[in-house]
Length: 186
Image (cartoon, rainbow, N blue to C red):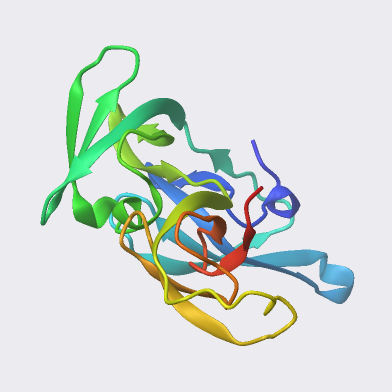
Protein backbone atom coordinates (compact mmCIF):
# COMPACT_ATOMS: atom_id res chain seq x y z
CA UNK A 1 0.00 0.00 0.00
CA UNK A 2 1.13 3.51 -0.78
CA UNK A 3 0.71 6.48 1.49
CA UNK A 4 -0.20 9.70 -0.38
CA UNK A 5 3.27 11.11 0.33
CA UNK A 6 4.83 8.05 -1.42
CA UNK A 7 3.25 9.06 -4.73
CA UNK A 8 5.51 10.61 -7.34
CA UNK A 9 5.22 11.38 -11.03
CA UNK A 10 4.91 8.15 -13.10
CA UNK A 11 3.81 6.04 -10.10
CA UNK A 12 1.13 3.56 -11.20
CA UNK A 13 -1.77 3.06 -8.79
CA UNK A 14 -5.12 1.28 -8.89
CA UNK A 15 -8.37 3.23 -8.46
CA UNK A 16 -11.80 1.64 -8.92
CA UNK A 17 -10.24 -1.48 -10.47
CA UNK A 18 -8.33 0.40 -13.19
CA UNK A 19 -4.63 1.33 -13.44
CA UNK A 20 -3.80 5.04 -13.25
CA UNK A 21 -0.47 6.79 -13.75
CA UNK A 22 0.33 9.87 -11.67
CA UNK A 23 1.17 12.69 -14.09
CA UNK A 24 1.20 15.61 -11.60
CA UNK A 25 1.78 15.66 -7.85
CA UNK A 26 1.58 18.47 -5.26
CA UNK A 27 1.51 18.21 -1.46
CA UNK A 28 -0.12 20.97 0.61
CA UNK A 29 0.16 21.53 4.35
CA UNK A 30 -3.17 22.41 5.96
CA UNK A 31 -1.98 23.76 9.32
CA UNK A 32 -3.30 21.64 12.16
CA UNK A 33 -5.38 19.53 9.80
CA UNK A 34 -2.38 17.65 8.41
CA UNK A 35 -1.67 17.67 4.72
CA UNK A 36 -3.36 16.73 1.48
CA UNK A 37 -1.89 15.51 -1.80
CA UNK A 38 -3.37 16.82 -5.04
CA UNK A 39 -2.67 14.66 -8.07
CA UNK A 40 -3.59 14.47 -11.70
CA UNK A 41 -3.90 10.83 -12.76
CA UNK A 42 -4.33 9.27 -16.19
CA UNK A 43 -6.37 6.13 -16.71
CA UNK A 44 -4.08 3.75 -18.62
CA UNK A 45 -7.04 1.88 -20.14
CA UNK A 46 -9.12 4.80 -21.43
CA UNK A 47 -6.66 7.70 -21.45
CA UNK A 48 -8.98 9.89 -19.34
CA UNK A 49 -7.25 12.33 -16.97
CA UNK A 50 -8.78 13.30 -13.64
CA UNK A 51 -7.87 15.32 -10.58
CA UNK A 52 -7.70 13.28 -7.38
CA UNK A 53 -7.07 14.57 -3.86
CA UNK A 54 -5.85 12.26 -1.10
CA UNK A 55 -5.87 12.97 2.62
CA UNK A 56 -2.63 12.25 4.43
CA UNK A 57 -4.10 9.18 6.19
CA UNK A 58 -5.38 7.49 3.00
CA UNK A 59 -4.07 4.15 1.73
CA UNK A 60 -3.59 3.76 -2.01
CA UNK A 61 -3.38 0.43 -3.77
CA UNK A 62 -0.46 -0.07 -6.20
CA UNK A 63 -1.62 -1.39 -9.58
CA UNK A 64 -0.78 -5.01 -10.33
CA UNK A 65 1.29 -4.28 -13.45
CA UNK A 66 3.55 -6.89 -14.98
CA UNK A 67 6.47 -6.05 -17.26
CA UNK A 68 6.92 -8.12 -20.38
CA UNK A 69 9.71 -7.72 -22.93
CA UNK A 70 8.39 -7.41 -26.48
CA UNK A 71 10.14 -6.78 -29.78
CA UNK A 72 8.75 -4.10 -32.09
CA UNK A 73 8.35 -5.64 -35.55
CA UNK A 74 6.63 -2.99 -37.70
CA UNK A 75 3.53 -0.85 -38.01
CA UNK A 76 0.98 0.03 -40.65
CA UNK A 77 -1.57 2.85 -40.74
CA UNK A 78 -3.44 1.89 -37.55
CA UNK A 79 -1.77 -1.22 -36.06
CA UNK A 80 1.50 -1.91 -34.22
CA UNK A 81 3.00 -5.41 -34.47
CA UNK A 82 5.13 -6.90 -31.70
CA UNK A 83 6.59 -10.29 -30.85
CA UNK A 84 6.69 -11.70 -27.33
CA UNK A 85 10.39 -12.52 -26.84
CA UNK A 86 9.64 -15.59 -24.69
CA UNK A 87 6.74 -17.25 -26.55
CA UNK A 88 7.47 -15.79 -30.03
CA UNK A 89 3.76 -15.00 -30.31
CA UNK A 90 2.84 -12.06 -32.56
CA UNK A 91 0.88 -9.31 -30.80
CA UNK A 92 -1.23 -6.77 -32.70
CA UNK A 93 -2.13 -3.53 -30.91
CA UNK A 94 -3.99 -0.44 -32.07
CA UNK A 95 -1.60 2.42 -32.85
CA UNK A 96 -3.51 4.71 -30.45
CA UNK A 97 -2.09 2.72 -27.50
CA UNK A 98 1.18 4.61 -28.05
CA UNK A 99 1.68 6.89 -31.05
CA UNK A 100 5.39 7.31 -30.18
CA UNK A 101 6.45 3.72 -30.90
CA UNK A 102 7.16 4.23 -34.64
CA UNK A 103 8.81 7.62 -33.92
CA UNK A 104 11.39 6.48 -31.38
CA UNK A 105 11.72 2.69 -31.69
CA UNK A 106 13.59 1.12 -34.60
CA UNK A 107 12.06 -2.05 -36.05
CA UNK A 108 13.59 -5.09 -34.31
CA UNK A 109 14.22 -3.23 -31.02
CA UNK A 110 12.91 -4.55 -27.69
CA UNK A 111 10.87 -2.50 -25.21
CA UNK A 112 9.18 -3.25 -21.88
CA UNK A 113 5.39 -3.56 -22.18
CA UNK A 114 3.11 -2.83 -19.22
CA UNK A 115 0.60 -5.65 -18.77
CA UNK A 116 -2.61 -5.33 -16.72
CA UNK A 117 -5.18 -8.16 -16.64
CA UNK A 118 -3.12 -10.08 -19.25
CA UNK A 119 -3.49 -7.17 -21.70
CA UNK A 120 -0.80 -4.70 -22.84
CA UNK A 121 -1.85 -1.21 -21.75
CA UNK A 122 1.32 0.77 -22.48
CA UNK A 123 5.09 0.80 -22.50
CA UNK A 124 7.85 1.61 -20.04
CA UNK A 125 9.82 4.17 -22.04
CA UNK A 126 13.52 4.81 -21.63
CA UNK A 127 14.28 8.50 -21.00
CA UNK A 128 16.21 8.69 -24.25
CA UNK A 129 17.02 6.64 -27.34
CA UNK A 130 19.88 6.63 -29.82
CA UNK A 131 18.94 7.01 -33.49
CA UNK A 132 21.04 7.39 -36.65
CA UNK A 133 20.82 10.43 -38.93
CA UNK A 134 19.50 9.49 -42.40
CA UNK A 135 19.19 12.93 -44.02
CA UNK A 136 20.99 16.15 -43.12
CA UNK A 137 21.81 19.28 -45.09
CA UNK A 138 25.56 19.85 -45.57
CA UNK A 139 27.55 19.74 -42.34
CA UNK A 140 29.56 22.88 -41.63
CA UNK A 141 33.04 21.85 -40.58
CA UNK A 142 34.29 23.80 -37.58
CA UNK A 143 30.84 25.13 -36.73
CA UNK A 144 30.60 23.44 -33.33
CA UNK A 145 30.55 26.67 -31.29
CA UNK A 146 27.51 28.10 -33.07
CA UNK A 147 24.07 27.84 -31.54
CA UNK A 148 22.29 27.66 -34.90
CA UNK A 149 20.47 24.44 -35.73
CA UNK A 150 19.24 22.61 -38.79
CA UNK A 151 16.53 20.03 -39.31
CA UNK A 152 17.77 16.43 -39.68
CA UNK A 153 15.77 13.28 -40.40
CA UNK A 154 16.43 10.19 -38.30
CA UNK A 155 16.19 6.51 -39.24
CA UNK A 156 12.61 6.24 -37.92
CA UNK A 157 11.47 9.16 -40.08
CA UNK A 158 11.12 11.82 -37.38
CA UNK A 159 12.73 15.20 -37.84
CA UNK A 160 14.58 17.04 -35.07
CA UNK A 161 16.54 20.25 -34.75
CA UNK A 162 20.25 19.50 -34.33
CA UNK A 163 23.48 21.55 -34.39
CA UNK A 164 25.05 22.49 -37.73
CA UNK A 165 27.94 20.01 -37.39
CA UNK A 166 25.66 16.90 -37.42
CA UNK A 167 26.02 14.83 -40.59
CA UNK A 168 24.49 11.70 -42.15
CA UNK A 169 25.52 8.56 -40.25
CA UNK A 170 25.90 10.28 -36.86
CA UNK A 171 24.09 8.71 -33.91
CA UNK A 172 22.05 11.14 -31.83
CA UNK A 173 20.63 10.83 -28.32
CA UNK A 174 16.96 11.91 -28.43
CA UNK A 175 14.73 12.67 -25.41
CA UNK A 176 11.62 10.45 -25.68
CA UNK A 177 9.48 12.83 -23.61
CA UNK A 178 10.01 15.94 -25.76
CA UNK A 179 11.46 14.52 -28.99
CA UNK A 180 14.38 16.93 -28.69
CA UNK A 181 18.03 16.42 -29.59
CA UNK A 182 20.21 15.96 -26.48
CA UNK A 183 23.69 15.20 -27.78
CA UNK A 184 25.70 13.28 -30.31
CA UNK A 185 26.04 9.68 -29.09
CA UNK A 186 29.50 8.27 -28.68
